[in-house]
Image (cartoon, rainbow, N blue to C red; front, side, top):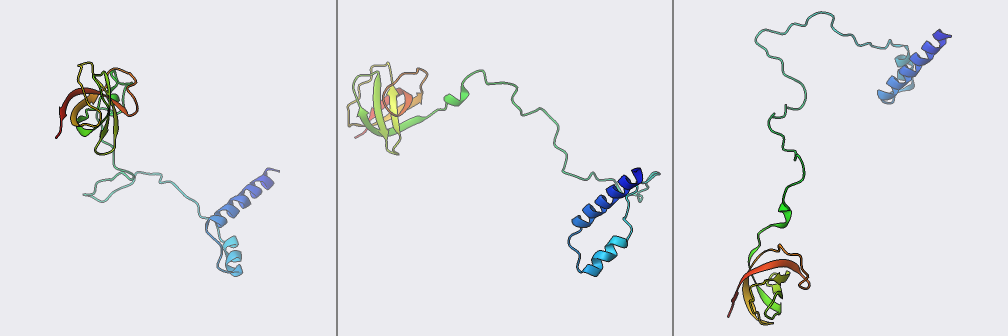
Length: 156
């Protein structure tokens, strides 16, 4: 019974190996390949010698440099992604008054919701240059990107 299983497993292996080699060129080639012995792989049993003066090179991708890991160890202590500096912006005041909220449309089309407790007065429709920083207070000052108004200069 074991002999039949071994023959069945061997014929299955021959079929798989023959399928991996691609289709035969002709029916005669198919019959010839069925009668040829199956090559076997063998491992070297003794030490291998290399020609003198040669060094062995590892096969595969180059080794990665070892050093401190760039993988983060945990979440940041502060919300660093929200504190990106913006700087000076030129645009037209869309919502004015004496504060604390204002509206501004920049020349590039970006809308800003400005917040300031400094008592700055902006006139609706005026062209201004404003210094804006990331908003530290979460307050609704109208549509647009909420930023802190640090300074304002009128443009003529």
